[in-house]
Length: 325
Image (cartoon, rainbow, N blue to C red; front, side, top):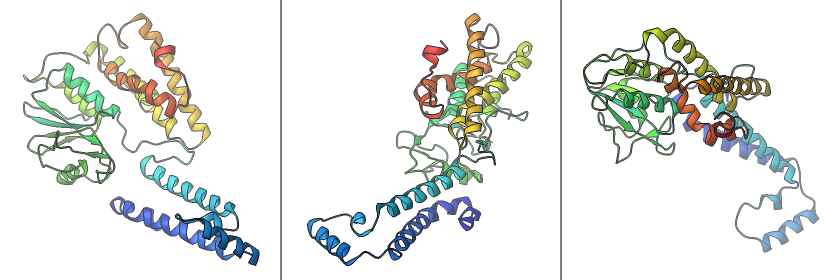
């Protein structure tokens, strides 16, 4: 396992299944070698073989199903541990640590009067926030959106692949990994991804893409001001709280591997939702009397909350519709 995890990420997937198969076979062999059935048990097995057909008939030649169950549990826990280490990195305390934070930075790119391609997936809330800003700024002619297919069986890494209905318009890649390879990017293949139409990388951090679209001052978008100067400090503070306690909070709960971090994340989510619900009881927007960047950051999580986050990540029947209207 140590050797496997020390290999480059693009080779781990190739060897993981082989490793799990070997572990499973070795443990089955060991369980059988240390427990020799009696002559009477052998006769029973022979009679059973005459009556059954198909399958491995493990329960007929194993002296106890305990060995089979133990091997299955070990295999499942090992596979789950590898998957969690790869997809949801953990702190030593069992808290989820997002490898690529989506909160934005002080170095958001500056967009020019040129064409761009924005690679997104409908299932992704981080992608959703970028398409909301694109619609509000009415810059569809400047920023072409390519909606990718969320199919991990077709994508080589990251889960995102292209379809015949929405092909890659720049490199004709088969999946997002192909785009990352063309750009010379290493590591995780994440969306959203903003690229200039000539193939120049712009950003793959949703917070920075949102801010870049908001701050664009050229002639190919409307003049909607989603971060007015008078509210900038309040918006930045709201953005930080919404990201840590709501946007990422649901994932901190869903991917925690120990009870303490899970409970802390759940408290953060519901405390912040309660506070925001109080704000929205007196106003249509979270940062004043107009739609701002903070509303855009909150909405994708809220829209997915009842159907996805509450039942799957938070393990609760609490809902936005009923409890935070």
